Amino acid sequence: MTDLIHTTILGMKRGADVSVEDTEAVLDEILACEDRKLLVDLLTTWNEKGIAEDEIYGFASVLRNRCRRIRGHEDSVDIVGTGGGSQKPFNVSTAAAIVTAAAGQKVAKHGNRAATSRSGAIDVLSALGLEPSLGPASAEMNLRRHGLAFLFAPAFHRLSPKLADARRSLPFPTIFNCIGPLANPAFAEYQVIGAWSADLVPKIARALHRLGTKRSIVVNGSGGLDEISINGTTIVAEVTPNGISNYEIAADSFGLEASQASLPKAESVAESAARIRSVVEGEIGPARDMVIANSAAAIFVAGGTDSLIDAADIAADSIDSGKTLKKLELLSAEVALAA
Image 1 (tube, rainbow, N blue to C red):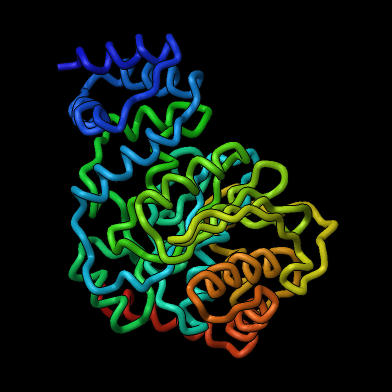
Image 2 (image 1 turned 30 degrees about the horizontal axis):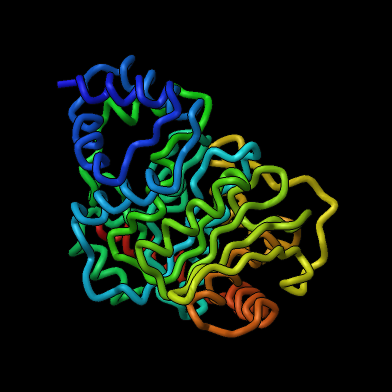
């Protein structure tokens, strides 16, 4: 049952990529494999070889084709990082999702529990008093009622506990960090995807272009950040049906001042949730600016405005007007009522 995995490992040691044609069969064996050590060997060899564009595209295509799909909300935007960056900030994209939704954009945020970080998008939800959608019906309801749904990846994709265990045991991100953002079950046509390394940006962008998107950006912030940075430059690949354009942005692209402070980090889920809540409640500082920049990118790609600076103003108003806090409190009140 694991012959194909052994063959794939041998091929990778010779520098061979998994072809698009072989991705479905390889994925099936990975998901069926009960040998944790073999999965670790595969992922380690893959990391040593490097991740190819065809592999990202092929595996993401299979996951998209097989997922429990959310229908009628393709006009959503997703804000998601691959994880695995050398820096460990608080859950910026989760905060940005709430800000963006409160600003009037429909957000279908795809996420999971932490595999290579201290706090995954889903981990921090419970600390904020929120819950993810556990299937298409609840996701569609939340998108209709609130313009925001947090999509728990294992509820929409057939994943393997052994694979998750193998990934958690490794000190580096894997191919699965790359393909998760491309397999949003709402088929969100607008995305802000953070990549853990600069060399992945063009690969993910080209894979995204092949999969189809209306307008999305793939970013890598300075210092190995899978978010937009406010204390350095961020490389960007903007993807539309017409092609891919590459450029750089910085804090002043959003009308913000470059931060000289160190990146706001979180050593735990509780600390990440506390940082998010402080931003939502109006605290000024680099954490707020990071959330504004990443929210602005989502508002921009979703067509809320044609200017990043204007988008940043919209995001800031979403916080300062109290709309973001109201959105958070409404969602958490519903969870408490259901309990």
